[in-house]
Length: 444
Image (cartoon, rainbow, N blue to C red; front, side, top):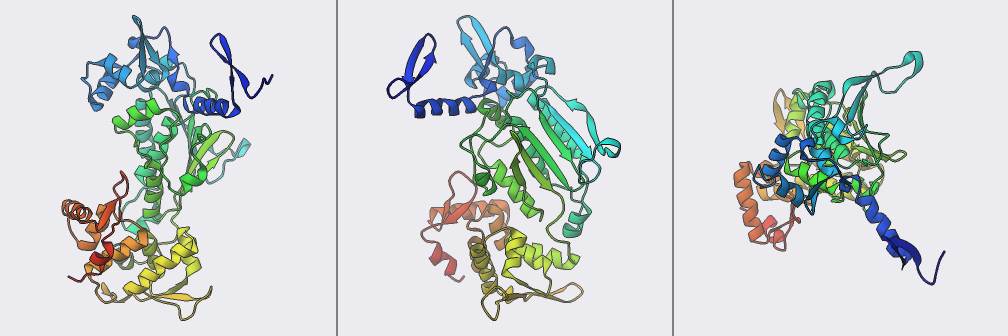
């Protein structure tokens, strides 16, 4: 039933004509404004945990006893005349018990698989860690952290690389993956809940719901920050409670943590309306000698450059190996390898082309004796790290100049004031400023 240029749409007791674009925009908003916004008539404040609300109100800057003000201000409740109506977001966050949620799968189930493949029948190798984790989301997240902290084992492979007890997965990576799965899932899907599967070689975190239209797998894999949330009321409160980050930095930080631990990059997929993140616990290469790895960790290089040196003590490698090891393209690999050649860590190939070999110029001459390249000006070291990464952080300044975090913070602030560096938006990264070239090349 198309009349003229519009399509009929019912608004209360009236039918109006809207364009296809306007109706599609309404559909997209409907996807983003989800279950959490529904009002729940007949459910009062007695269904909520007062201690949880007090803690959240205090974290948000409200008086702990100002329940109503906090709930209204955060869009968790609405006052209609004399009636105070809760939204489902309030129940998800603060309900006293799972029964008040009126949702059969709002919690988390954890499964342990003996091996790297699920088997069925007489060879069934799956066991569920019981009981299920149920209740308000604050409780669910806290208990999940505690339970998984006991289930995640120490990794012998990572111990060989770092020479200290290391868990199979970086704590921030798996915790952020869990809280994202809980906070951003589709709660209108009552038939499925968040599931965590622990295999011998990986962890899979499965969360019901497709990605929002404004978010793509490609953008997430490229570590671009995404602020969109299906449940913005829930995520804001969880962020104020310190249980998650609300700056779009969570996913990029997961990638950074896995990379820094020399583990494979997270795998992201959509499977039948379920978002799946896979974290693998096998390092990208085997560990070398303790003296060599320890020395490599202290070099003023980014993690990708350190990886190739750690893997090739006294050896040689091709650019394609560097690209494959670090999952980067040829142009980025060339820039980073070129900076290592300029700094004296590598000897450039004697010919261009696929077969060209980069030779590592560092070597251990005897027990505990290291022959490094010629010492570099500290500014040159800092410049190389900036060029390799495209940015620097407080930790980079500490590494390159051997100073404390506080001193690094003051120094970086001074560099920003002098226009040598500029802040990268609202993040903690610093990028090249208009006066960078003169400063970085000056001797001191």
